[in-house]
Image (cartoon, rainbow, N blue to C red; front, side, top):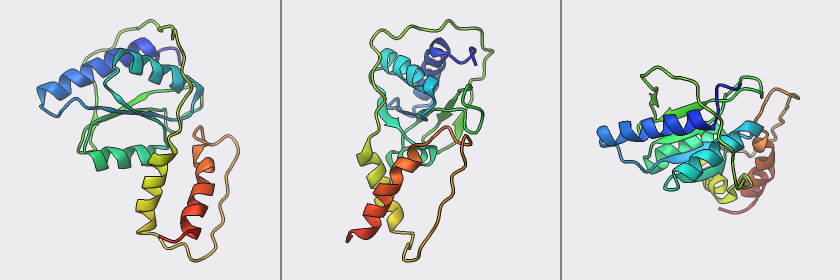
Length: 173
C-alpha cells in the first residue's frame, strides 16, 4: 500500500502527458477517483501539480469511462478496482478507451504532504447526464430488487445514486 503514493502519481501523470504530446493525442486530461480514503490525497496531489486537468470528482468507474468516451479525451482514474480498501492504483486511459502502461522501470517515490486538503467532490450533474443517457436504452417499467453485500465494495457512491435513478424514472422525459 505504501508504494502507491502522491509522488508516484505525479510522476506517472507527467509521463502520461509526455506520451500524449508525442502521439498528438491532446493533453486535456480527465481525472476521477473512487471513494477509497487514499484516493482523495492522490487526486489532490495530481490536481495541485497539474491544475489544467479536468477533475470530475468521485465517480463509479462506468461513469468515468462514459465521460471519457463522450468527451473523447484521455483520463486517469484512481482506484484499485476490486482489491481490498487498503490498496490503490492508477488507470491511464487513451481517448479510444485503451489503457496506457508506463513502459519504464519504477523506483520508489516519497509521499507528498497535502498542504490544503480539499473536500472530495461528488458532481451530481455528471451523474444525472449519464443516467439520462441510460434511460434512453433501459426500460424500468417493472419492479427490480437490489442486494448489496457488506464490505465487498469500496465505492459506495452507487448507493447514493439510487434516489437519482428513481427520480429520473418517475419524472416525465
